[in-house]
Length: 408
Image 1 (spheres, helix red, strand yellow):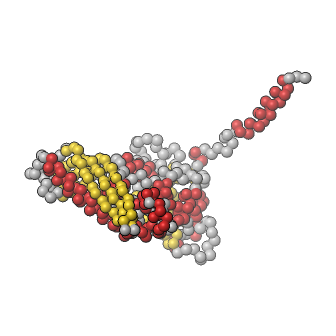
Image 2 (spheres, rainbow, N blue to C red):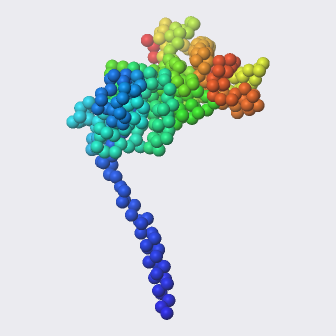
Image 3 (cartoon, helix red, strand yellow):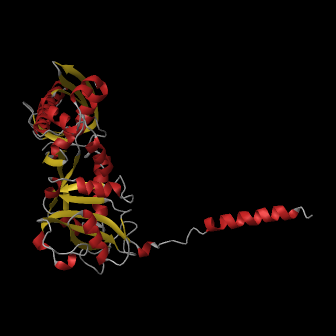
């Protein structure tokens, strides 16, 4: 008997079994045949504004809700999206030269609107490159349960996508034409990422928002942005939430105060302040460090924050009063500490009034005082109600390391 026959049969059997696994391209879809959605904006509209031809997923029977949503999508045009800086890109509304195609659809929900979007484009839509989702303040002040449910269950959505709240209509951000970037969505993305790296804004991706929203001892927040002169985008504050809805927003300078209380580095905010004897000065914060202590006083949570800041003295606007001694530097530090401490105390009291614990104080109580937490907190609403009565002490220490002055 030929001894090579069993070995040959085994080899043939192995080839037959592995052959189906080697055909990896049988279901390939070329990137040119995909509708890559780069950005989305979501606004509220009335049902009367929706045309009959937009209702492709349901029968018009007069039972539509009074309010619906308008979704504007930026879709990448194959061959026009730049791979680097350059010139020659048109505006978002110029269909012949623009690197993106802007499509507006309507729907009862985000899922309904995305189905309507697919009805208007030939290629299958893909959200794997979605980097920016902008919702209007009207949407944010309503329930975000449906929006979060759709995005969280979609496996194509990255947790590093940015979710922004806009002043006014969110669709206006899909038509911006910034001179520094030919793709509007990528410009907004670059603005947010560079704000994080320069210490102007916390790293608050949509995954971070969902995580904070899921925690019992912390409330969520989002960037609040506005348009200036049509193409200029301003980070106007933090939009913070309670009970799953936006309740208010901070001032721009309070973003730096929030990051200081959270000990987020690097520093990046400059602050102009009036000193008692030296006039107006400008300080630049470079580093932040915070020590936090929690305890239970008289049956109520109490937290103490000691914030350490290091910075530079950038400008002095009173040329007739020289800053030429350590005592004068200490006077600037003392005035800065008092004024910023007032800002932080006001911010904490405002969030307590709105029952929005964006600082995560509840998570500190939960981790350091688990017995108290189990006795008094049984869901997120319990802590948001208790947060208004939490005692908070804030102490600030500024150390000016460098003095580079420009008299004005």
